[in-house]
Length: 236
Image (cartoon, rainbow, N blue to C red):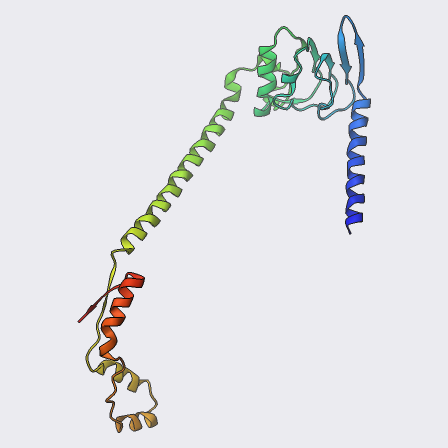
């Protein structure tokens, strides 16, 4: 079984490496003293940006692909990037496009072919840098709603814990009253009623001189319950 698992793991790793190699091999790259490292991944039907792009890349071409968004923080490691082309991609301009918009606005010195939105239809053909903050107002409300929900949940949990602690505090001062008659007549009556008629007649002819509870040891029982279990009993 272990050998089979190792074989399966080895095959899985090999498949992943082949996929990464295929994606990377589809991107051409060149190096020159004037332009630096240039990576061209255009027209490759890419759904994601390859994560094996060198961090010292100066020119990155990703046009004519199937990119819907750019993962947050992706371009932050490309400190030497001077040219990036993201045009002709079907970007979905929802909350997930905020990072790309912010990065493009912050890095205006980078030569870019302004990428445009394809979805939702209301934003189609709009440039990503041309989107206003109001376009993302729902994203802010969603974050606030989540924060408010977490805050209410935290208050509820604190309230439940407070009630439990209060209950434990009150339980320390609880006392129980145990009423025991000297002859326990009521207990005998209940015992007699629980017997069948033919057995009840025999019990009536028998004198019940022995009490159901030895009254001499009752103080010891009360003292033990009080000391070991903090139960206070009152004899009536």
